[in-house]
Amino acid sequence: MSVRFVFQRLLFLVMVIWAASTITFFIPRISTRNPIRERFAELARNGGFSPADMDKIVAAMSSKFGLDKPLLEQYIDYMSGIARLDLGVSLNKYPKTVWVLIMESLPWTIGLLFTATILSFIIGNLLGAIAAWPRAPNWLRGFATPFVLLQGMPPVLLGVLLLFFVGFRMKLLPLGGAYSIGIQPSWSLSFALDMLKHQILPALALIFGSVGGWALSMRGMGITIQGEDYVNFAEHKGLSDVTIFRDYYMRNALLPQVTGFALAMGGLITSGLIVEGIFGLPGVGSVLNDAIRSNDFMVIYGIVLFIIIAVAVLMVAVELLYPLIDPRIRNTN
Amino acid sequence: MATIAMPQTGQIKQPGRITMVLRYLRRNPSLAIGLLILLALIAFTVIGLLTVNPKNAYPLAVRSKQPPSAQYPLGTDFFGRDMLTAMVVGIWQTALIGVLAGAIGTLIGVVLGFTSAYFGGPIDSGVKGICQILTPIPVLLIQVVIASSIDKRSVTIYTMALIVVMLAWMGPTLVIRSQVLTMKERQFVSVAKLSGVGNLGIIFGEIMPNLLPFIVSAFVVQTFGAVFAAFYLSVLGLGPLREPLLGNIIWAAQNQGAFFNGWWWWPVWPALALMLILGALALIIMGLDEFANPRVRRSE
Image (cartoon, each protein chain N blue to C red):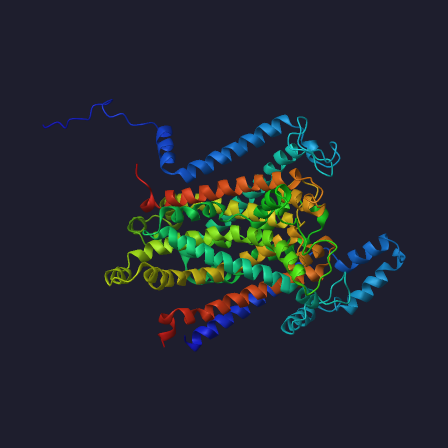
């Protein structure tokens, strides 16, 4: 891997972050909505202070947040804030910063998304590879078909149906939330089990939503690879089926899938956030949901920017780690 | 003078157009099933719009929280909307957003893809560069920012379609661009150029007809994406909240704890309807891929 490639990828990363933050900077400022005024109008409606002073309060708050400065100066402040991981403060939970809100909820999101993504990647690729493997038993090869039909569905929809069938009808699993009502969070086994039980349905929704996609592309890859000379050679050497499947067939078919993984990251994370919102899990998705409901603009913009940057960083990380699994790239140069 | 025996008419009966289409559909089951589901949905909506009173899809129209019964076949929700009517109106609105955003997005894609690939040079590198930077950004999140910056009262079905399309033209642009790039090197294009056909003549007369299957396929892909994106926005509570858009209904149902309260019918119908819509579109996309790529076309 050449230095030039690393440099190129990092430049790309900076470009994406710059584009995303510029968009999230300018859109709210083109908009006619004034978050601060809306927030205080809401407070005034519920009583608490007289609306007559509103203009003064809004002006004072605007200058406190630096919103009365010239646009260019605001832009520079905003960009340097992002460089320092400063995403602003929540209007609703003032003085909590957006960064703190995200960091509090991030472990939940990472736990769910990491598990679901890794599992669906493994299951999907295995099913796809088996579906294309001529010597696999027939019943095993058809296993991927139902998942392929679900491919591309928003996981939330599967989540709603899972909630209905498994949670509501069969009463097997809880209907939402992070843990049962009335239980205090503690470091005990029963609490951990209870928590896990609440994670099963959202995780299943995410897994069902993406297994088919992996299986489909893996099947395509598998079919191409079967005709390759090295697979034929391995067969003629008399290697066992398992060895051929694992070391010759899977290993090579997986390489493009890893690139696909980097590209799919954005969609996976967005779907994850929305599933969290619907299941009422205390992750970044629910924070976003709450922020949208309560017009907490700083939190909405902060989370959006954070996720975009996270996706871009993860994508470039996967691309930079690629040489570790593909010796062909490692050895050039 | 030798005469060439003309084939006698009536000897070989050419099947009619419709029979040919039906025969093709038999060979392409995913296209056939997809179209069938879509037709059923259209029939449901059209018959529905003709028979039900659309007012019942809005709050306080009927008794609230009624389970499915003879009077309300799909039940009624917490706000007093008849779910059957809400489904009819919701599917119609979803289709409207999808088709509008799909058409606009495809149009932008065709125009940008053609100009960029056909004329090349700085335009091409500009368009390609912008597409490459925007593609990895999870577009939905930018749409969340746009949708939340708009005054909630002015969000309508049409603004939803515009928000969705604003950042969703990169896909068709890249597809059309790559197709035009291969197409413009073909010999029939060179022949047309040598015979003095102008640029517009070549674009519309020579290249466009060959790209029609790709354009149709790009349109369906775009429609799928638009329905998907509009659903995600509305399930986050960023849609036109008054309208019975399918995502809005699910959002409202989860907000009111529909499953906890036993009102299962409230979120389940819109979820099923959306799965049918998206499933039909996905099947059609798979079928069109086969149609546009004759190499994998199955023979009888």
